[in-house]
View 1: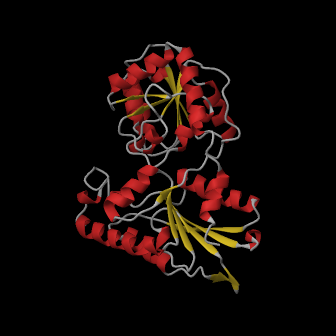
View 2: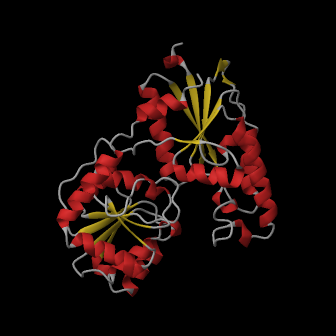
View 3: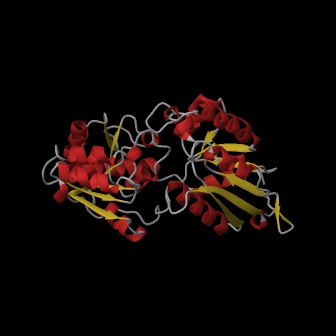
Length: 349
């Protein structure tokens, strides 16, 4: 069978005017499939999680889409990603789960969860029922990490296989120096806990600087926090950075801060290690801890400013340690390839 002529649709739930790790995954997957001769189309459907039942409406929209064929030609494979794309019906559906609707599961009781909404419990049941019906329709269920696999098993009793993939910039990342700044790259979102980095900075060596690259809802509040802590002259907010600039920032930092709460996977961890830089993270950072190992390639602490500051100071004052931990990080993840991911995702053809 000539897989090179097979037609593949990748399903993406897209929040208009926003782009994150899921979009990077979808675009990278499409490119990798095309490079191997597949004919690929990304199917973007707008997604809203509010008001209360809009998330369910989003799942129903996917359920009504016919992807069995297009213009009279068979679509051989559909790859679903995050909620609610896997509600799509197809005779050869494979799911590569980025994440479910976390507000109905592990974040349910948190400030981000459905428990804060009127009718939240009913909505949680509806979303659980959707997942329990739609996901097992998949010929194969993969996830982007052990963390996502664990959640799916815990909340839905559904088995899945973790399937890692390299970050978009894998072939460009490298190390040049170990400068005076710790780097953060990504969306400025409460779950990324960048406030923890800024609060830690006031307890750090006064020569430590931080570069927080990215855009998001927390941009203004983070700048205000830096002023409140009197560290605004030590924190730089460059906003969105190009791939080229991101590579340069990774190449010159002494460490990378990536301490989100219960992260699904986290490209930043792999980007840091491919740049041979250690990671500063926390004990509850989820998928980060599938790669970050205390005192081997990372500094891991409780999510408290003074403890994070201690990790940062330890690395800032000992660049030889940074180099050693960074080298260990590189060895840990250098074997993650797209070849394995593509082989798994297309195995039903």
